[in-house]
Each structure stands twice: as C-alpha cells, then as structure tokens.
Length: 444
Image 1 (cartoon, rainbow, N blue to C red):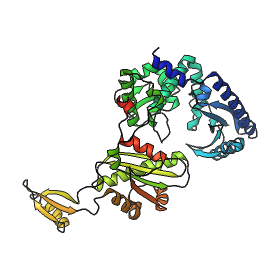
Image 2 (cartoon, rainbow, N blue to C red; image 1 turned 90 degrees about the vertical axis):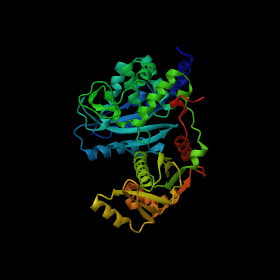
Image 3 (cartoon, helix red, strand yellow; image 1 turned 30 degrees about the vertical axis):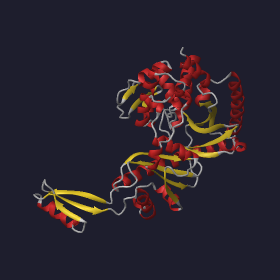
Image 4 (tube, one colour; image 1 turned 135 degrees about the horizontal axis):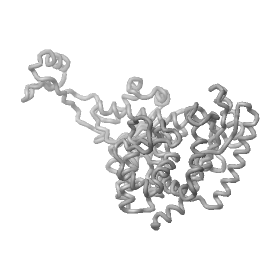
C-alpha cells in the first residue's frame, strides 16, 4: 500500500474510541425515537440507517439517520403528521427543525452531530411509496455484501470526493452521495479501481444493468432497484471533475486529494466579478439552494442579452439568512454602442422591416456584402448598473424564481468581487475565479 493511501486511511477511518462514543449516542437516540414511536399505532418499527448503520461513515464526519417505518396503508397526510410529530417530540431537547425532501422530516443536532428523523413506509422490496422507502434495503444490502475492508474502501472514496469538492447528493452540491460511493465500490471493488475506471469514463457511462435507457452524464444503477438511476442527481460538471481528479491522482498521488486544498482567488478575475447579495427569510436549504441556482442562471441569461459575456457563475448561501449570485464576466464594462446585423437588401420585406425598426438608431449603413447594419447606443454598458436596474425595475420579468422575488425586493446589493464580503461569499468567489489545482493536477 502506498504511503499516501496509508495516511488517507488514518484520516478517514474512525478510531475505536470514536466508534464507541457514537455507539452510545446512537443507542440513546434510537431509544428516544422508539419511545415516541410506540405511542403511534401507525408505526411498524424504528431503525438506524445511513452511513452509521452501514459502517461506512467518515472519521469526525457523520450524521445519524433514524427511520420511522410507517405502515403502508397509512394515508399521506397522517404519514407526514406522524413522522413530524415523533421527530419533534423525540428531539425536543436538541432544537429540532423541519426539513424537506419528498416529504418533510425532522433535523436536530446532538453534540455536534446532525440527526435526521425520517419517515418512510414499511413496504416489501420494489413496492416503494416514497423515496426513503429504499433506505432500509440499502442498509441491508451493504451489510450483507461488504466486509470491513470494503467499508474502508468506501471511506477512502468518500474522503477523496470530499477533498476535491464533489461529495454530497444535495442540490447545493449535485455531487456524489454516500450511497453512490458505496455502489461504485460494489461495482469496482476498491478505491483505486474506481479511480482507474473513472479516468476512462465515456460520455453517458453506464455502470450496472439498467432496464431502460437513461440520458444522464453518468448512469449508475441502484443494485436494489434496476429502474433507478443514481446518476440523476449528479451534474455533468461534477462527473467531469471526478474524471479529471482521478487522472490527476493516478498520475501523482497526494494527500491533498483527501484533505482538500482551499482555493485562492485570482485578483485579476475578482475585478471582473459581480456579486448580487440579499437576505432571505429562512426556509429549507434544499429550497433556497434551488431558488438561487435558478435565479443565477436567469440573471446570467439577462447579462448575455445585455451584451455582457458571462464566463462562469456560482450561487452561495450560508443556509441561515444570506444568499448571493456570482458572475465572472469577460469584462464588467462593454462598448457604449452595439452593432445590429440585418438582412441583405435583396430580401425586400425583411430589409424594409429592419430599416423601419432601426431608423432612429445612431447610424445605419450597407456593408460590402450588401447586408444592412445599424449602430445603436446601449442603455447600459456597465454590468453593475445593468443588474441594479434589472433588479429594481424589471425583476418580475427577469426569469428569477418567484420564491426569492420578495426577498430581493426587500433589499439587495450588487458589488465587485474584490469588495468586502462574508466568509461564505469569499469562498465561492475564490472557487469561481481560480483554477482547481487538484482537478487539473496543478496543486503544489
């Protein structure tokens, strides 16, 4: 085994002491949830799930997932009410809050560890009624299939994915989740074999045996459900990052791939970056992330229509009250005029229409190829002023999700990337203005 992998295992595999500490907490939490669940006849059982139950959790980095298995005949309204009721009652000492996926669930924090109390239906294999129903089958599958060595290979892969910034299936990341890492090890056997395979992935790479055709950048079939493509939640960008990072690591091993290397902003690019920052009324992170990502895409399109070339874009939130949309531009200032290209003069109707619409422009002329051109003064040639006007006067028609329109209307600020900003925005700015040294093999 290489020295780098030995070191990576030390920072990935929990110590015996940590495992014993977590075991005690898990027993306490399971007892609390079980005690509350016993008060509800709709509940069939309560069980631990996720990476803790499967034994694939990372050192100093784990969540407890506790599943409330509710009888299949329970209606959806009662299903949600029972799940939330048990979650809040059992976690009342730990500041519980509701979170949303397909169905609401309860999240709390116990001694620095996140706890998710999630309702699911108690169903037979394949008779899924909610997305969470597969979870207990995932746990059983891993426990029956993996020995301790395989579980530690999963830990190496998770640590690698985390180190290069592509770990997590949530909408904020659109990356490789814990179960995806487990399924990759199931298919390829070891961490290094996953990287060797990934370094040669083809477009729409298929892993597993699908029962139908999928068009995602990576097709990864759930071993317990051949109709389910785990690659649906993974963005094309993150698939590409895995391919490049795998090639970089195989070319030159480094512990940095596991520990991570913070990005350093490029000062020149910061000057060409604009940030739209606003505060929002708290909502589930999955909801606000979806809204600001769609908003960022919409504003990038508006900037392009306004003549500003967007090189990269990003979204960020502290998941409490602050959100921002970030744009790296070719230049924050463009020419004060725009050239419009029209039809050639031989297309009578089209050319007459073009001349009529552009007759009041600064200048109109015939080019050497017999096409008609027109020069038009731009209303905005400064991107900051363009965005400020758009958000103040045309927000309703800018394509921004309706959910964040009230937040933006309460107040926003547009500022340059080299201006003062919060820690989360500075981190996003560093990433959007710099080269990822781990992915491209340039990290020192």
